[in-house]
Image (cartoon, rainbow, N blue to C red; front, side):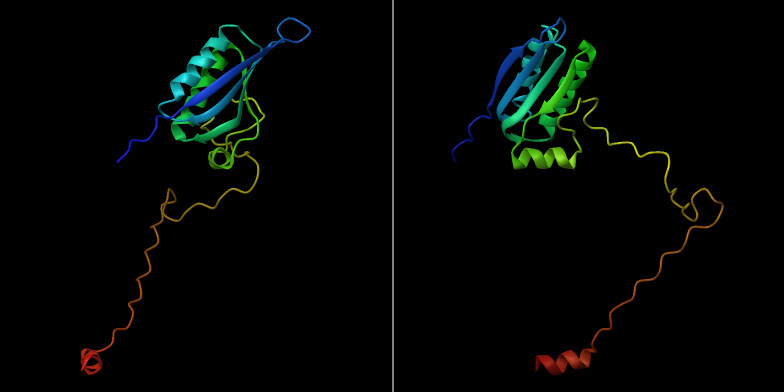
Length: 164
């Protein structure tokens, strides 16, 4: 059995500055795989870029072939580092279908600043309120489960005739 090749993450950084002070933007272009083994490379690249104190940090996911939940956690850690440094972190680019599906399932925003990746959106306070469940905090007994219907079985004599 041949071992699998190690996962690789490539990154390239483009640092641009605008017309005035405090308008610098760092953009990290990712390629390859972002998972448990390559996540520290991303954190290193983000930390190096944050030492230059850009106004915003954009992570381009276009070249990313694969990302799992550990890679998503590393992106969340990068967002926390950027928030502590006072830098806006934005995911951008058009990711490949596998990465796009992971972002869609976890409701991770693209092209908007990241606050916390793993928190689901908060439902507004207005709108219909669900009815209380009987037996939960109402003082009433919970409803009894309905008995399951048993399927009718053929008699033993019937099976004996079939087998002979």
